[in-house]
Length: 399
View 1 (tube, rainbow, N blue to C red):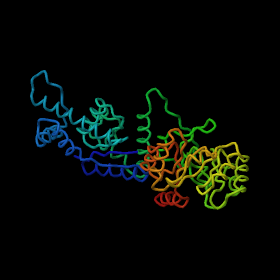
View 2: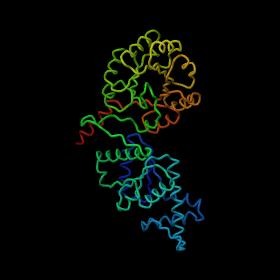
View 3: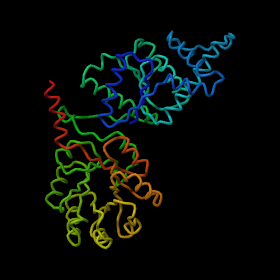
View 4: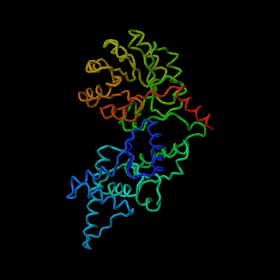
């Protein structure tokens, strides 16, 4: 998720609150950017108005000075009111343009006039970003002006800060949801509510429908504890050793979501890959994954042996995709590290309807880039158990 913070005219306490929220979102992989909105509008509006930058800035500062919003008095022949109206309208339009072009999902501010301009921009320019204010002094005014208001008292510790960020995430999803669609109710147990969640960006993917199930996120792990405690749509059980039936059986039995099992292609080749694929199907795997070095005849043999999708991994742009498809590949899995989006984009240009899974990295921005390049679903490598335990232990020590 991309977040914009309007930074002008903040008190020290408000900026401290905005910074705390920013750090929390960035720790979760979101992108936060700041904008000196007063300077931006002074420059932008002066370019489209007859007034120069100095006059525009003065007029905006007049609005700020009294916390007054312009009222339409054009019928009274009040030249200054008309000028304020014009500047406010132009400012709102420029702010909306900036938010839309930046594809921000959430905009945070700490100044009433900025809040007014955001609301005016939202209603007149129709951008879908959630608008929220931190440290509101006039809550009754802001309730009719903003989508959400956060008091400084609410940002008192890690736990309350986490709740605020979770609520903002939920409100963003609700605002971006098409009107008339109900919110999915959340049901969880008292002990299992602390699970590993996939980054928000994965839900922007179209998904791949396999035997009636739409899969958008694949957790790339063989750790049973993580597999049992995450919200991924499926498991990508591929590991850097020769595949073993005992491992695939344990993962399939433990997982309560579909599993795609690695059956070789690198170290393991030939007849053994066929046997492993047939065993994985018999154990209940939804699909099998072959690594990039596998030969086309070997791929064909595996595809002929099973009645579940065969996923072939692609690691560079030189792969002959047409040959892979001719020899039985049903889904392409792109794992090109930093080059993944470029590889996905090239494949998508040649094959508009081909199912593509791709590694998305660990941040919302990198995942979003992969999806926009053309990936239908994303593999996500979760933090290690050690890293997850470090976070828990840190909380235990603080309490």
